[in-house]
Amino acid sequence: MNEGPWLDDDEQRAWRRTAAVITLLPAALDAQLQRDAGLTQFSYLVLAMLSEEPGRTMPMSALAATVNSSLSRLSHVVARLEAQGWVTREPSPESGRVTVARLTDAGMEKVVATAPGHAAEVRRLIFDALDGDGVASLACVTAAILGRLDPSGALRANPLRHETGDRPTTA
Amino acid sequence: MNEGPWLDDDEQRAWRRTAAVITLLPAALDAQLQRDAGLTQFSYLVLAMLSEEPGRTMPMSALAATVNSSLSRLSHVVARLEAQGWVTREPSPESGRVTVARLTDAGMEKVVATAPGHAAEVRRLIFDALDGDGVASLACVTAAILGRLDPSGALRANPLRHETGDRPTTA
DNA sequence: CGACGTGAGTTGAAGCATCAAGTAACCTGG
DNA sequence: CCAGGTTACTTGATGCTTCAACTCACGTCG
Image 1 (cartoon, chains in turn yellow, blue, red, orange):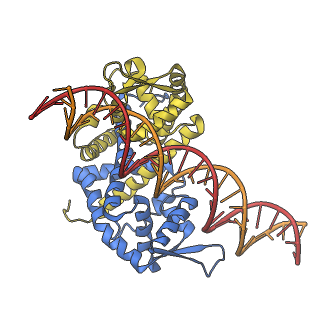
Image 2 (cartoon, protein in one colour):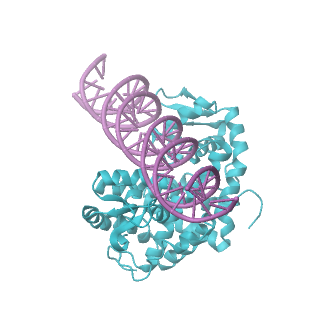
Image 3 (cartoon, chains in turn orange, red, blue, cyan):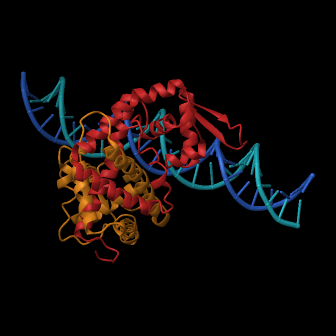
């Protein structure tokens, strides 16, 4: 609407609400997962993404890309998940410098046990508040913002890979 | 659209994008503030909210409410800001159990110096990607979600207090 | 008045994220 | 065939957040 550095009133309203959402929503989702499963939103995501992979394995760097994290962060988290017995790490037979993370049976059970409660919370906090148009708006607006956050476009391709014909194990 | 625990395809797409936004957007905003001002998004918010208050002062608990944080978190952060010379804490003359945080002149200068760059980043990441309808959608959808996150409605009243006739010192 | 409950705030410990550095495997040009 | 660069990953330190006590001030009910 204007091109100056400042935000106009409409933008300011939208921004304040967005700011509140991006602080409160992750906190609320984390709280549910922590309470019901002892997991972080992030560590749950790691388990969930592995659970959808054929063979339940993924190289660390591919996993890092799909969960939008640095390799460092992922390495720490997987170390903790490994200590819990939900994931194992093995050197890849194909290339000596990649290590593949594998979801164990216990890890799979954990995901299966955790997913419904998490999905219900997502539904409760987001989708119960929106009608069909609202869902469409949300998809549209977030797509636009993602385009700015991630000019490479990796995200728009990658985590949506499963969108069609996917059993809803994840959320 | 359906009432079961799972998300349908449209919802799943919207959720995956939303999840990406709520992880990447805070990280991007934090990165800009850290790089250009050595501040966290949260500590900047604290300074900015104080800067808009008449007298540049606010009781700790009121401040905690406007920045959506626990008192504990705020206390730690204000301690750091105090060490930097941007804020001071004094016991309130009115009630012996409230302490009021005051933005110092140096703190005010910090806000003034930091605000433009931050506002520009907000504009770049969010509003440059949206047209007028997009801004309206964003305001609408976030309002709906906020209603779920904060059933008390405090947020919808409180941080929007400044919406009209507010000089855009903040962002 | 005095015991109790509550509200406001601080503090310390523990967990998680981030950043900088380090290691090890692979590739490439000389 | 080996020197240097690059990719994949790990590690350790530092800092921020959270959680559970704890302190202190204020109201109130007997």
